[in-house]
Image (cartoon, rainbow, N blue to C red; front, top):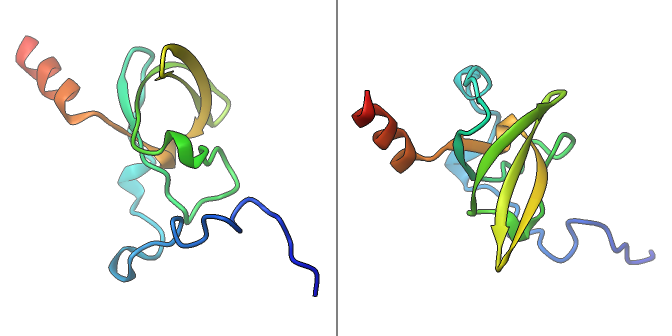
Length: 107
């Protein structure tokens, strides 16, 4: 057969989940309400490839939610000395814990 050059061919093992992490996450991941200005971490979940899976280059980076576009979110991320805009599904982001602690201390 012909060797295919798809998205997952060069990084198939990187997108693989651990044995205990396999399957779909709980509903609480989808019920988080992200607002513009929230600081989020980009954590790619390989069990969802269809909607807004970010490129591997952006996994582990921190960005700011700019707006909501349909079911995805527009996130501004600093890449070297440039600001880049990425469209990410809600299953691939989570609120930054340090930012969340600072917000709670202000209140």
